[in-house]
Image 1 (cartoon, rainbow, N blue to C red):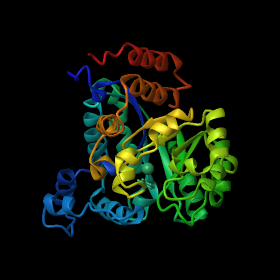
Image 2: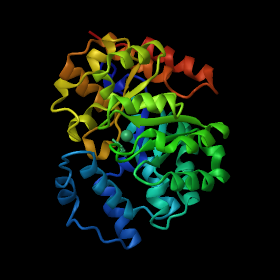
Image 3: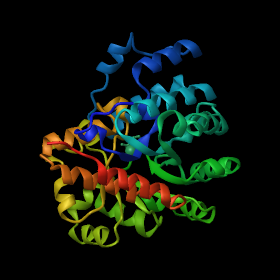
Length: 339
Ligand code: ADE
Ligand code: ZN
């Protein structure tokens, strides 16, 4: 693999906020639809891409959950993950902590074991094929009930050897973190790491609640913490990582343009921020593309890009393999941005 050695796309990085279902490109969606006898409500890949005009998070989620109808067999999930890993490798990703949404599949009659074993088959050979180490994070849909989340955790118990942690995603506003207190307590008892989406569309208070009630170690997005200086101080002091997704924020209208992104202000505030792709097939770019986009829109210096890459490995769940983290961090320090 020959990566450009002076661009942020080649900078070694960890991807910490990536929904595997959000990597389903239109071409693969149509191929799987044909294979599985699923009829999609779009004439072709062009028509599907043209539907990627989102007004908010919910308008995206409606399409995202709808397109998942094509994912039916373990092989489908393996192909999905392989396609992502190949693209990620070409964008400097060395380690990926991958989200999946089991309830979006079990609700359609696809067993959780099919999803996990399918993804697992791709992840098992990821290092050898793509040079990417991986972890799997199981997300609960916050617009479903706490009972459904608990049942999902229960159903995942035979597969816990494949799962590093739990997360919380889907429609944020009106579904505060505290709704999932007991589920997260059980996840902690099972030895799982904990993260949650908070402060994407929802208020800064949801970030505080995710920390205090759910005991999360990382906040996904967390953008709206910037409305609460006391919270910013706490996040910086406690070195709580925030997994930002700049292209996603523009496409879901959390901000108007990339130039409005608070990434620079967040770095200046001493926050441990990282740059990620969220749902790259829908939002116009993978991890390296997000680095490229913020470099251009915010005029970031090479050393700021290096700090973002360093943060990504520091924030990753590599406590079970510190020598590997140290190797990745050394790769970041050695990276030459050129003139
Ligand atoms: N599921 C997939 N992408 C998401 C996002 N950006 N926010 C909440 N839930 C999601
Ligand atoms: Zn997300």
